Image (cartoon, rainbow, N blue to C red; front, side, top):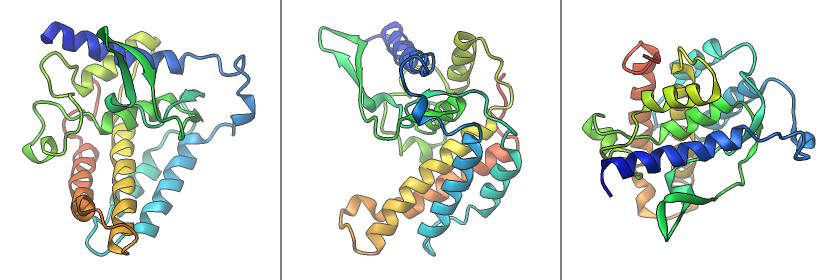
Length: 229
């Protein structure tokens, strides 16, 4: 697959997320899922509590990050729509006859009604690109580094253009996505450290939290991609 094909696949995957966010959830009978405005606040508070409950002495502190997220979160949600909450390349199914075409999306157990920008930020937490630092590149599990893939900034630009939104100052959503990923990693490591699971792949997950904290701190300090170009 050449560069053009990789770009087309990337856009096709992103278009699935956009299509999901455009679903008329009221017409689809999903109104009982609606918890009202305040999704961002509930997420920040919920994941903060989960990290503190799962933190081990060898994990990153994240206190300054959690305080920053609490202080910087928007006063109201950008919108309410159907969100996937775990949308990434390894959760899509491609057509074997046309591998650039997405024919399915998997792992819906965390789907809910919430803020679409939080969903996008969660997706971008997994988006390791070619010019990232070597440590972050070593954590890559998806083909987002290939020539033809959009960068994180380009994904934000493309999403905003397709949704008719201007998305300056996306650093909050990027930082939240990284923090949420750290919480997930630390919860897994907590179970490993407690002897509840013995998979040796989990032994380094506490160190992963330090990498993710460093990336959050860079965003907080106004580093690369803290604002949409």
